Image 1 (cartoon, rainbow, N blue to C red):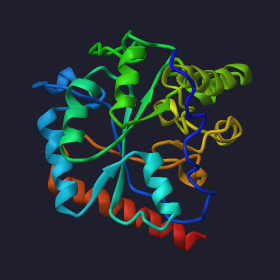
Image 2 (image 1 turned 60 degrees about the vertical axis):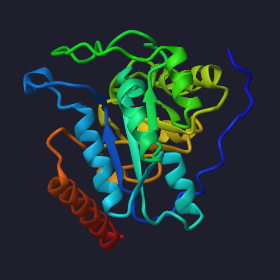
Image 3 (image 1 turned 180 degrees about the vertical axis):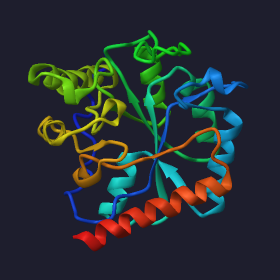
Image 4 (image 1 turned 30 degrees about the horizontal axis):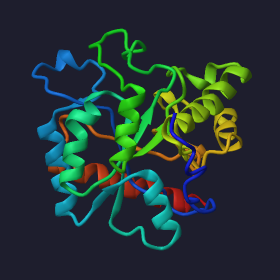
Length: 257
């Protein structure tokens, strides 16, 4: 394993009661022609991804990792930045997504499962089977400047996990990723987006600087960041609509405070 040359990334800053950043959620990037090949709606083609990245650029926005985004916001430099996340750690991140990110000068956060290295997405019973990154693949993504965060060990619903399992999923996965990359991961992503107050508190207590959910409602905060799912169907008009919906949601949150 590589030496632990960096025990922790720069702090993302204290939790603040400000609007949540706009964070986009991707999973797999692969070619497919029939929607039946993607029953969970987790796949975009490379062409669709590039069109979406180009749309961001046309709006004066740059995609960055969540860690970079939060640090920039804490320093007052977050304008024009959008978080990009890729859940599960599919092999196609290296072959299909990463080249496009690098081409456009973007970075992303890759949430991986160190308890399922080199296997596949067994938690998706309808398929299709998609291979997951090996330890070497994870190190390659990190070496390319992408943030690596934890998605837990085995992709379990943490709201249904016993306390000891929850602790292992949070801290055990973090320790394994530190061994793999030499850097302690700052971010966590809740499998399935499922959270409750106990799980959010456990992620905070485990030492993560932030954690990503999907639609956390009243639990929204630094350890329950909302994200916008991006699909194959999202062209320019739908991307703009999703941006407006995010802005409206944050405005409603601000009014309720």
